[in-house]
Length: 475
Image: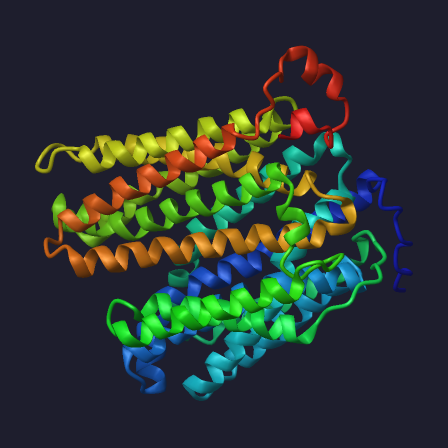
């Protein structure tokens, strides 16, 4: 006999242990669905193109459509969660994602598949924007850093496992099963979502014109970034359109009590610096992710399979570092942790860039471990700071901004490498230059984190901070 839904939890209290376990299982499983689904489809693109009879270039929209919907909907999803309640919008996102997965599995044509992927992205945005916000109501403040660390661990492992999981499914089943497997898992998430805290929404207005301007900005930005190298005129026009939409959006939202673009949160120096550092580090991370396969194959003469093996230590090291960084961030000033992570990430990338061609490539494995560990050491405390420097009522906006910073950085990193490949004729020099640029950007992200460390944040100040929301420990 079905049990009644759990009663609402006061926003200031954490959940009891048993209910907390079920709530965390729901959140983390939903994150696995969204992150994994963004990675498994990549390996199936040739099969999808052949089966549906479309050009390989057209099949890339299966990936682009999903990512585009994610970035367009993150901030509106956060705002909707603040209005209607985090659990309601989170569960609605899981439901939409699951239904869209069925649409993907049944797609007879590419337009149908791309449309279903767009719907998946919209549902996934609600999950990604509100998952971290919900953790703030699931865990007591003293354990929140560790919880965000486990969240980062799940994301890192899901990203790393995506191609392998996709290949394993394709080895025994046709490509629609890549999406069909989401259906039973999504149903389980919806059942366990009953354990999530029922935090009530607040009175706030969501302006449809602002939502449209937000969508126009990110759509023009992403598509323009992808086309500017091959079609300069169109790409430049889309970039100008993106700038116009952003200017209109900021002008319309300025002065709002709870703006769609969290201008109120960005006025806080610590939050603003965390966002800037996040964009810089994710830009470097994506640029290096694009550059390294080319560097390994063209510069160091490795085959595709071996090059893939060289990249495995990065996400594994990130997965190791994330929970460690989470526990440390509950005890130490996160600015120092983020700076240390940024410096390690930059060092690993710089060493990769300057390693002499023709020498033994095995040291690159160590460089990947350094880079991945540094990335994990940076990401978890930085995300924690973004969440805890804002009022609990604005946790949805903070979660949306966190995801937006990540996707904007990743888009910028891909654009940098596209431009380098267009401007630098040598297939070896372009990725080496990209790694050097990535090292500089990630170093800048780490150093930016130091700017939020208080002038006097000694041991006595940390001891007196008490709660995890205390500004010294948080910043």
